[in-house]
Length: 428
Image 1 (cartoon, rainbow, N blue to C red):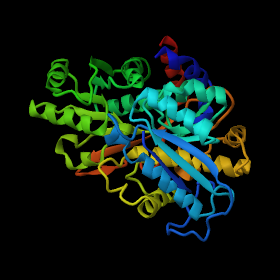
Image 2 (image 1 turned 120 degrees about the vertical axis):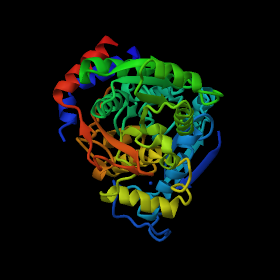
Image 3 (image 1 turned 90 degrees about the horizontal axis):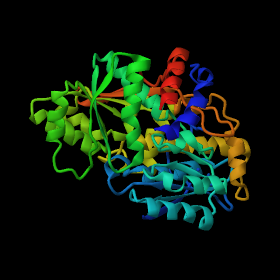
């Protein structure tokens, strides 16, 4: 946890301003956040010329496939939609998505491939659970990484990474805050054993519960894996500790297996999760009813703003099958929002095929409380380690479907909560 402290603590000092409100596939496709673009496939508006090349890396296969398996198709669909609507500031774009399968060695090789062979100007919407394998490499090469695996520590520590939604400390705060509102005080945390980033959550939840929100504690913790044959022992141990809210930091299928196996023991703690773990099949499982997830970007269930309406409509046309897949979840919107952030930066920097990564950063540094028409909480970028994005969103499983209790409106840390969070992070 100490690895995230320095950057996050520094970011906390200015949080008031922020919260004032492997397989390879490619597609030619990438304009500013655009809720008004066409959703009909068309080559007529695709700009001619050499494309602007961008890339992404996802763990679309492997242990986290049930959560991120559709991200590559989502990014390709975004690219096709953008090109059908004029590209990036009038220039075509090419999106190259590589799958690392959750393997760190593979991921590092793919980062080098994107930078040295494909000559990408940015890595956009990456959903790799092992991006720390290439964080220092992209820093050295000056390549900006724009969203979307916001739970990874690189989005708090690396000057090359540009978060497009709430990072881990804010998500953990949101989770504890929702737990208290729901009357839960004894939290059980089952972090994944497959990725180092999962280890952050238990100490954060404990610190926030005691010193920021108050009255919420971590009563039980144990690492789990997606291949674990049974979670019954975890359920029984959590019950013996009085756990009334369960946080399973694993893929969507594993979260549901834990809930099912606990229910078999007559034990149903409220599932309280991060949106990266959400699966659409949760809605049809009675044991997941009441589950709450904290999100860095607006809930999929809310279509009250044009930007999310456009996201759904564009997916249905340019990425057929994604929204009906069991793997479709909030991660797809994370990736889409990241791609839209790149597009806006590209428009402001007037990118062309000859532009450089430094030009992309120049466009990103124009962001001041930018929300991409509601696709993100307020974003402000400056040189140096990322600032903490201090606002989050909430989704809930209720009555056989997903709901958005607060709609598309983010909940933001108050200045006093931000100050208390700073003390928690400093303590490490």
